[in-house]
Length: 84
Image (cartoon, rainbow, N blue to C red):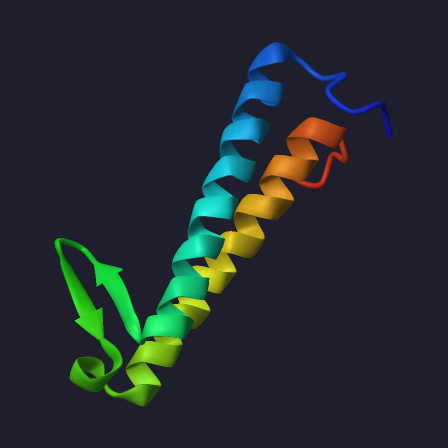
């Protein structure tokens, strides 16, 4: 394992972009849990419209994306070699 940011410049840039996107997805999930409303394509969908199960499934998908973005971002920044 190398020092933080010791990879190629494009890997560092993409890693930073992935972590910024992870923060944005995290804010989206937090707001969805707080308000019961989540953006879905071009409209905002509420928990009441979707039903509890579908709404929670959508939150779970967003959390999975958040996790993948975090892994990809830290892999590129810290050169963990998790993704090849």
